[in-house]
Length: 301
Image (cartoon, rainbow, N blue to C red; front, side, top):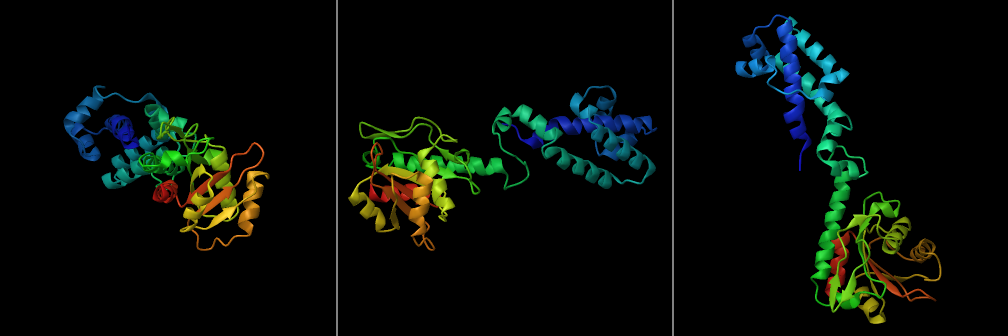
């Protein structure tokens, strides 16, 4: 694990300080004056002068870095820039290069998983897409643990398998929904999880969740269970239960069913269909997130 701040400290700052030290020496600064201007020790300046500090080639070659060094060096030499003002100028460029630019690219090179995430990532933005997706994955894991640790959950798994899902806030497609790859299955009375949650691996549960949200539901988490009238009745004691038509396409059927329902005060919802030719009857428990949906299920296990 490497933070972008480490890229700044380990690669950017030594390179820029070395370039600035060289620039100021070329302007006639003594070693002591360079040290005072940059707020570093004379021994550090000596190392820069003798090439004992490695420079990062991409940073040295960047025209914006070169322009910054020229401008800050000239400002420090003329007195137009104070050390504090020089610091601010460098900080501004650092923030600029961190946002999908040079430093972000160096960070991705050090952390290939960031590049593989295939989602916009703004390192200093707490609402960045990557952070939300990682939060959703963690939420699905919590929901899974709650269910797999619940006594009796395995008996609620349908023949087609169960899944636990949660979508991001602005989900539009199944690629915005995290779930278990494959499905949870009952193996000798235990719910077996085939792999770690991922985005875009669920079709049925994700499609239903998205359809419910399109129809006005606010739920972001979902769990599917085997259908049983008594199970629906038990779930209905705490949440609205709505039947939809299994013979119609899921989005169309869910939209039609929810159009007839009052969802104003419902933070959880039970959707179910009683089957059709080649379609197993299924119950879907929807909640604010995956752990919330899992808690509803756990209470009736």
